[in-house]
Image 1 (cartoon, rainbow, N blue to C red):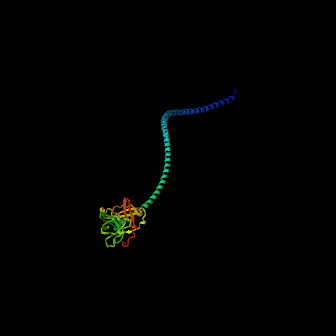
Image 2: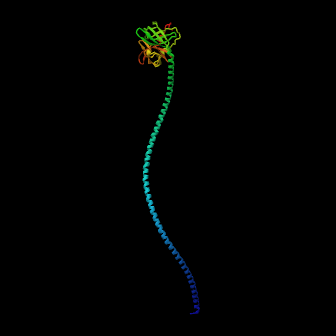
Length: 345
């Protein structure tokens, strides 16, 4: 073979060998690096394996903790379910209670409606009561006025009684058969007295006593007997001209229901002095046997005969003549005693 041909081949082989050596050196260096990296990786894998083992332990522990927690959670869930059941039961009872409350509220609303009606009725009753109170106030004012009038009347009667008794006398008579008493009223200052015929009729002696206790004899004249009524005039046997006298009124002005008083000496022997004052009303104006009489209810008794019947002005409007039963008495109108003879007045 030509040496010139071998030289390039040899050169090529040398270059190739050198190249291979360089390449092998490079490969070896890289291999060494790879081996070093593999050792490092092996160490890392060992660490990872160790870490994985640690993690396995931790995972086991975590798993155990998780299962324990799950058991606790399950227990708690069961407790919660029991509580929820109780709550459901309580809610059921609460629903029933709420329904009862609703029913009660409905009943209360009905009661409130009734109460409102009752309040309205009470309001109406209060208005009625207020009207009644107004009426009562009015009535009280009227009653107060009436009481005032009654008090005034009572005071008038009290004053009247003390003023008229001075002119009313007790008459005691003695006849052939009995001793009797009656009453009379002085009508003139010189001592003429109006009384009943039946008080002085048949008298042998007449004894006249004034309210102050003064005592006189009496004189009766048949001239002054009334022709058909129970009326007589008696003269006090005295020259006095200052005897207390009664005021003369008018009986025809009397009306039924009008108040009157009667003054006299009932049961004179037993009761004596002072004169008795009784109060009543005119019960009726009656016509008896053709004559007019005043019927009254003031109490009179034996001994009142001949005494005066007076109005509340203190005026003589009649002469007491007859008492039948309690509350049924009669008086002769004063006009029947008039006119008196001239020597009487």
